[in-house]
Image (tube, rainbow, N blue to C red; front, top):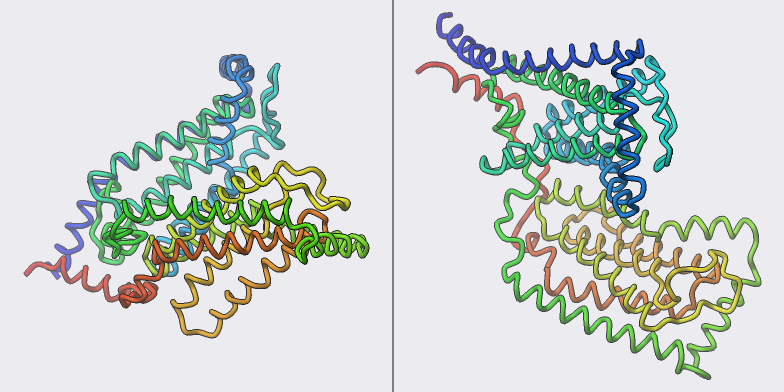
Length: 496
C-alpha cells in the first residue's frame, strides 16, 4: 500500500504545484469577466465613455484607408465561425483517424462550450453594436461578448495545446507567441472595423481564457486518474502523443532534389503555357472552315435553343461545382485527410501545385488568347476573363484527377473506383453546364483537358506523389492501445 501511495503522491504533488498558478489565472479571468459583464449590464458611465471614444477614434483612423480596411477584413475572417469550425473539425477528424480520442473529445467539448457561451451571453446582455460616423462592416446580432474574439481565443488556444507536443522544444515558444498575436489581431480588428466595443473584445478574451483553462484543467485531471504523469502546459496536453499528432512524422525530406524539381516545374509551366497558347490561338482565330470551327458554332447554338427555366437552374448549380469556393473547399477537406491517414506531405504538395498551376496557367492563357465568348446569350453575364480555356472545367478536372491519382494506388478497396468516376463525371457535368449557359465553346473544354493532362503529367513525373506507397507506406490509422499505454505508464511510476 505504501508503494501505491507513493505512485499516486508523486504525480499528484507535481500536478498541484504546476496548476496552482494556472488555477489562479483561470479564476482571475473568470472574476474579471464577471466584473466586466456587470459593468456592461448596468451601463457604467466611465466604461461607456471609453468604449465609444475608442470606437470613434479608430473609425476615424481606419475608414479613409481602403487597403487597410481590406487587410483588417482578411484578418478578422480568421476568427469567423466558418474558419474556426473548419479548423476544429479537420483536427478532430485527424485525431479520431489516429485513435487519439481523448484529444478529439477535448477539442469538441472546448469548441462546443464557446459556441454555447457566445449567443447565450449576447442574448443575456443584449448590447447594441457601435454606431460610428463611417460604417465599415455591417454585422447582425448583439455586441457583448465578441464572438470572433472568443472563438479565436478558445479554438486557437485549444489547437495549440493539442499540437504543441509535435513541435520541437525550440519552436514551442514562437508558436505560442504566434497564436497570441493572431488572437490579439483578430480582437483588434473587431474594434477597428467598428463592429465591437473594446470591452466586448476584452470580455471575450477573459471568458475564452477562463473556459479554456477549465477544460485544460479537467483534461489534466483525467490524465491523472488514468495514471499518467502531470506535465506543464508548455509541453502540451498529451506530451507522449507527439509522434501521433505530428502531421507527417515519418517524412524526412519532402523532395530528394528540391532545386532540380523547382527548375523542372518552372520550365514545364512555360512549355504547358506555350502549348495552351498555340492551341488557343488556333481554335480562336485560325480554325475557320474546319471541324473545330463548326463544332464551336453548332454546340452553343444547339444548347441555347433548348434552354428551359428548370435546366437553367440545374446548370447554375453544376457550374457552382467548379467555382473557386467549391474547389477550395474540396482541397481543404482532402489534404488534411491525406495527412491524417498517410502521414506524408508530398501528396498535399502535389495537390497544392496542381491547383496553383491550374490557376496561373488559366489566367495567363485567358489573357494571352483573349477569346470572345460564344455568340449566344451568356447566362452568367460579363466575365472578367476570356473564354479560352474554361477555368471552371480546368479546376474541376485538376482537383478530381489529382485526388484520383493519389487515392487509387493507396487502397485495393472497391470504392477507389468512385474517385475515378468522379474524375470523369464532375468535369463533364461542369463542361455541359458551362456550354449550356453560353459561357464556353467545346474547344475551351478541350483546352481545359489539354491543361490538365500536361500539367498533372508534369507534376506526377517531378513530385512523384505516390513514392511512399512504392516504398511500402501503409495508412497510419492505428495507434497504441490507450488502455495498455495507460497501464504501462502507471507501472513505470512504481518504485523499483
